[in-house]
Length: 594
Image 1 (tube, rainbow, N blue to C red):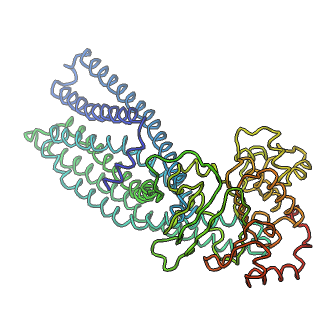
Image 2: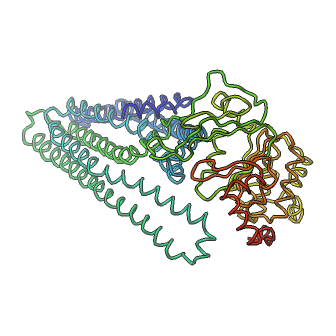
């Protein structure tokens, strides 16, 4: 717990001053509120002792002015504390979200695999909000409440004598009750946030796969899945709130017991036994202090509830903040990639250390700079895994991967990835204009360079058909363009980087063979010195490559040019014959329809 608090405390940073100011204002407010009942009680005692007729008006005015000034100062302290507390808690939440997002950006694929996307969204939004609420209460209420409790009990003992013994019964009872409630409610709140992850996952999947859901008429199934997750949250929250609801009756019981005890016993002693020394002013002060003690304890109970909720949130946040990227950085990293040569030397890889089998095994591969390399293989043959080792999206488990003659681990990661452009199998466009999406490849690219790259990627023609051309707005995920259009925009974006190595991971699967051929011709003329690695399902896409690799079960089953593989590789020959006999070269165009 201490380690977790210390970790979160690092996110306060520039908001330490308003946080400390809140604490000081709370001390001032608590002290003044505890002194006011003392002055009021003393005044009543003096009035009763001197009889109303003997009390001088200047004395009454003096007390009134003192009480008014103290109330004004207390109000000012409370108002300023509210302002500084809001600034500190909002700033703390801002820094916490920033640190979480920055941490996620530093993750390797290995790290990201440990957290679901829905869980990360919940941690950065809902969990941070709950922790912010707790921080706000801790620097304000959690300071005010104990001070009020201590001051009030001390002043009550001073003013009321042995009447203050009522707190010996009430305070332990409340503390025991609050701790019991906390212990019972905490497991339910812990389960709630795990269920939040499932709920967010259901929403995310449904929104992303809306077309599939409607295409298969599975709306009712999705409603049931969402309803099940929502019912689970409702069930756990209801159970927790039922337990927490005992706060109020417990508080009311103690409050009214305290009032009745003081009124009955105090009045009896003040009227029937004046020699006891109990006076009306003391009873008045005791009632006020009693309310302050109980209100402080009630504030404690609210803090307990909030801390109960946010403790699990804080733990989940710290899991992300404490997650260390498993990619080691060289002490003096190389900042420049000299050429696009790629070498795999005895490379084996598995996604998790505890995995029994390697996804890649015994890979030895040498690609000269400027070569065009094609990779084919069945589903699950680890084609994508192989190329992901080049820009260090993953690190090889065994062996080494070299780019430009140097181990990829020796490079600065940003410099390495700037030299490698990947068009992923799952193409992704971001919300914004076509220009903004293209400039992800080169933020300083001119409009002429954008058009040139799009012409090479065979994207300019369909862009010109849009009313706004290159200023056309792309919806999140590129849902307002077809699959083939999305692929060509992603290729154009990669071309703008003018990389040393260009990797196309099945990125022309949604375009027809004629367009595919034009794209490959454009790549050859635009980037002659760039190493091009093309993963494809169609032989036609890699037929003219300088080297074609046939992947099978995480190994390179064969390698060579088209003619060599037709003679030496049964797998390659079988795929080629199936595709040519099936009329693959005469595919219909399917890239401009949704």
